Length: 314
Image (tube, rainbow, N blue to C red; front, side, top):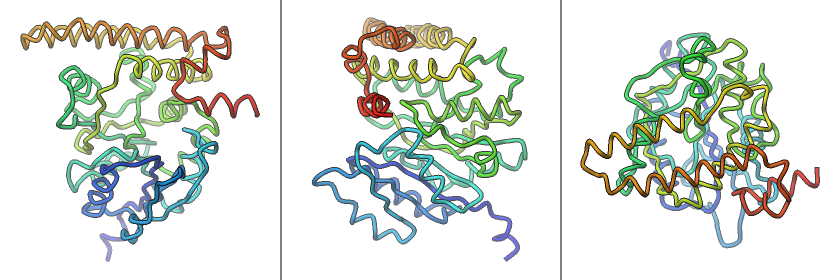
């Protein structure tokens, strides 16, 4: 009984849109955890012909439906947080599958340090992941855990604020103290909140032993759209990102990846890497200057057209 009273109680919140079989694997993985969630809230962006009735076989699952025009990267997660009465909030995406039964247990461990406001999991490549993306995963999610604070900004730069809602936990008291996720965000709501926590004196923990299987084989065009929206989010939140460049970290990744490919005798992959990096760079640069672009071009560049339409009506 005493052990149960000390257990950190957490809810899991997952925005859902046109899910595939990975959502079932995710729910099965959560069902087998050594540290079980109290509730799993699925915030379903409802679309015609898609039903989550099958999810009701999981007794801790609650389904909340919203219309497509209501979805927002920040606002929808903010709504999810308000559904929870627990001490910790765990946010996941529908395609993040627990690697083992210790995900939540390991995600909770960093909170033994009272100054930690959030922790995020290590992302491992899926079996169909391309070589360059596999290396990117290992670059962004190394084997060593660490806690990042404001003292790391000079050394780590923008990586100090890095946190991913693919799988991340937040201490509810700190979340509420700092206002939670921004009500409207085109993208990057996790880093905006993490940056707010860092600047308020809290730590962000990277929990390398908390593992999810999650990767994408994005095309150059998809990378362009993602980086455009990433830059827009940074431009819109100078209180977090002003004076901290993302470009140096991107260059470091490209150089490190080239060395990795050469070392593994995969030099033929380098032209593709350069093309992909070009798409990322162009999207990012355009996003930083989005306010100077005509509306039609912004809508061609973004991956989140609903955000701009709702902004226009705000």
